[in-house]
Length: 104
Image (cartoon, rainbow, N blue to C red; front, side, top):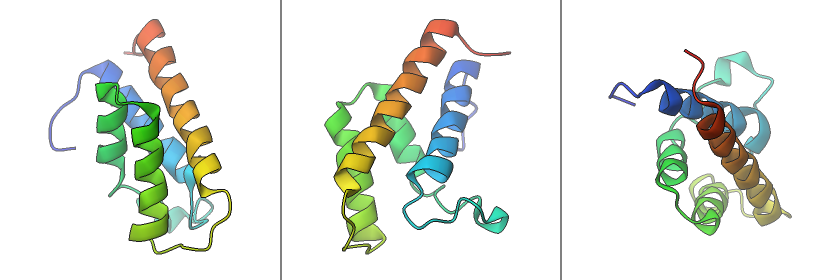
């Protein structure tokens, strides 16, 4: 992101990055250190949807659409179910950070 975020949003942004890389990981690169930035293209959009309080289905649709259309991974069983679980994790992080406040 080109702008400086407040601490709470900065922490959420980092968590979204981690969840996309280590848990969503549709192309299975989480164990490759040189690929740590592979999902950064999708990070701002997921963060924005999450931060704005968009409905869960919007985040799920973005993740599924990205996987099936943008990444051209068309033969994936369970893509929607996995995206739903990832969205649930992201929303839990958002709520936890909001309730706890940022670590400064």
